[in-house]
Amino acid sequence: MKIRVGMGFDVHRLVEGRDLWLCGVKIPHSLGLLGHSDADVAIHALCDAILGAANMRDIGYHFPDTDPRFKGIDSRKLLKEVMTLLREKGYAFGNADITICAEQPKINPHIPSMQEELAACIGCEIDDISIKATTTEKLGFTGRQEGISAYATVLIEKK
Ligand code: MG
Image (tube, rainbow, N blue to C red):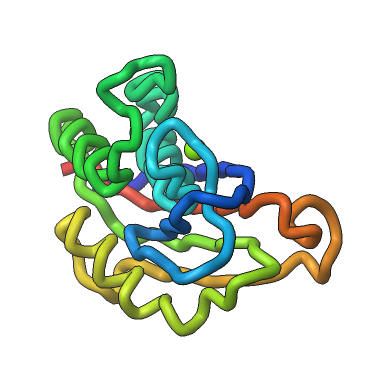
């Protein structure tokens, strides 16, 4: 069995007048993430980790933010597309470990529903999706609540 690993990282800016989507869950907050899609920073990091593990470039390569087809798109659709690309290359998803860096709002209460959303998109067990939340102790752009960043690590297996 051949296993491979990939990592992904993404940042989106927090602004007024946008919904806040993280891991496919809409979270009540006064600010939302700005982007061409729904700006789900955690799903974007996860997609990049999956693509990276399979050496299939990155999310911007497959879904350019200049393409009107992806304007306002639900990032769960992008994740499903990425899973199709992964399977087409002969790989199976193993597990993912995601870290979301945000000063506000509190992420922890939403983690179980986030795991359910991602597992449903990927077609894996909920136990294969780890989601962790951290602040950056009020330091940097996440600490100033100017944006949210996310990191993801993914393991895949050659079928
Ligand atoms: Mg992004």
